[in-house]
Image (tube, rainbow, N blue to C red; front, top):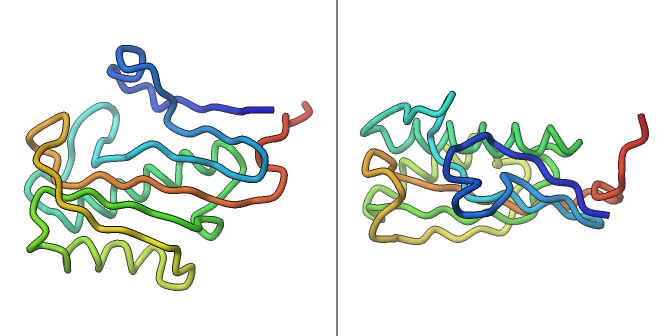
Amino acid sequence: MTRKVSSGAPWEAVVGYSRAVAAGDHVWVTGCTSIVDGEVVHEGDMEAQTAQAIRNVESALAQLGAALTDVVRTRLFVLDISRWEEVGRAHGAAFGDVMPATSLLQISALIDPRMLVEVEAVAYKPGVGAEVSQ
């Protein structure tokens, strides 16, 4: 069984992806950025953008019955690796007790030039991919 959720972002249909997919005991969350209601927020503030991206990860997980405490892996893609501490502080605030495996990678661009960081995650929660009975 596979369960999927959408963020409603306009580019999901164009690219053909889901915000998150639960299958078996895992949830894979697509890279999240600092978007609220379809708009980029916290322009220029990498730490705030990271925190918002993680809140977006959290929202996707919650829709599938998982939480940040279930995250076992994160990847953070940044435009300027020299600002790693800003990203690290936001990641640490969200995952300090969870301590998932992680990578911090510099990339050349994101889909919108106002975006400074993208966060993706993998969570482990037994049975999360099973169909929910109503």
